[in-house]
Amino acid sequence: MNLHRKIEEGLSSDLRLLTNLTAEENGVVPGLVSALMDQLEQWTNGQPGLNVKDNLVSEPAEDNFVRMTYGTSFLGKVRKGHVKVVSDAISDWTTRIKEWEEYRNLERTVRDLPRVEQKLREEIAVIVLRRGVLGRCKYCPL
Image (cartoon, rainbow, N blue to C red; front, side, top):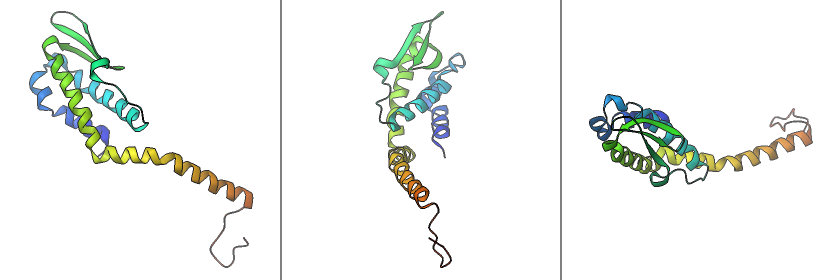
């Protein structure tokens, strides 16, 4: 299963979000999926990413709602009493994702890319300098 789908399915079935958030707060899950996917990119590139304390922003909106953003991801309107639920969900899912085998594999792959790229450059340089690809059969002229 790819990470995007795993995050999306996990957040969509998170009981804490399902039982507390109302239909009016339907932007939270898609916004969190987007934010966490952005986080994955940051983490795999060695960046610290966002943190709830500094990057979860709630601005007053109409009635008893606030407009929430996490980094550049808009989470929609959330009831003031549900801000803590969203905050806890972000913290929890951030920790969970970093423990997944799929995430560790992605991180390892991204970390290995520069080495693989360098190796490819060296092989291409050899091919260009020799003006051909070395063969393994007895008819190969090189």
